[in-house]
Length: 422
Image (cartoon, rainbow, N blue to C red; front, side, top):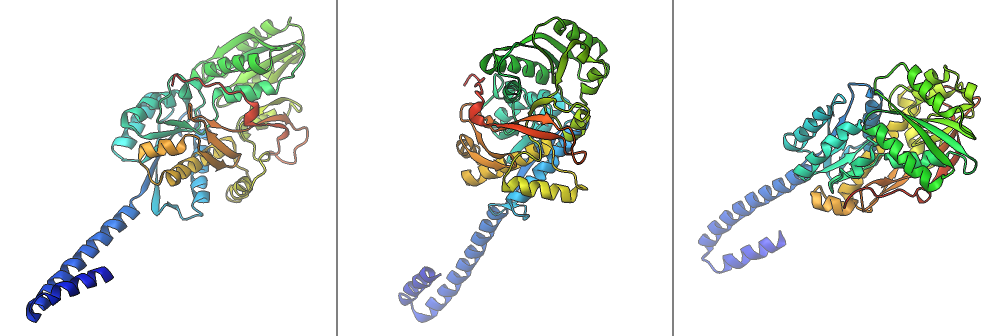
């Protein structure tokens, strides 16, 4: 304003008094209008919403996973923004979509989010098939897709593109953590039971690779694949029993399964008759409550509320219990939180939502989560993160007190392969 005043004084001196007064009034009006317009434009730019699409499979067999992801995502935004739900001067708008666990619908949901809803970035989805269908859409629209919680290695492997970042763990991280839970010496024979789609087949391949790297004493001797909706596991179990029962050393059925777990049904068929154990892997709390009759059973898990010790997890657990009848956050709730943290940290680091600046900011980016810090590996944009080797407790104090920590498997202890063609 001071420079404008000097300019006006300079002009008015050069004119007759009456002309100067008229001119000054016109200049002041013009300057005032310009100032108002400028302020309005600045306010409009500041007030532009930060729009994020959250695509999950709230209809279908993984409904529980999807609901947890959404809860965790919203709690992550709340924590990061201190409850204001604004970031960098912008109101956060989350547009939720249900892909019904259908890959073609997941693809169209993402297209709609980018083209019609004009979101700045997207997060999703629950199933690996849906996530794989979404990858080329992100590349076509040149916008960021944060994959959470789909697991298939191909997402950050052969089907990957530079617009894809994953906060969720991948099949190889699951497999390496699972391999670390096997004994390091002695002969071990394993039969795998997995679902017959990308998640299951990627999981078995990743387990083979992981065992070859860190547990060469453990051999997969049989692979059983079952349809996703299988409820009767009698035939599958018999094939695995037959493959294992005459093998020397320790005998294990390793289960890679999403949704309602086959553990109780296989256990009912008495694998202990053949000295066969079951390694079920981590899962959501309602599923792991079915582990309680099998104390001492071991596996690896992505998140369990009692394992991480940090201020974010302390807040997360306390707030979730307060809002959910004393129930702690779960496997995919933590994943949703991690995706929210990654999205907002990236926007802050990039200074906005320009895609190229976001990619630059996110490659090698460290961000905070209930599990501790994660890091997006530059080569394939996979989040490197710790995992947990657990043992089922004998006597938990309540229904959610299920696991005891055997060891935290640090990122440095997981030789995670880079599987893309970058």
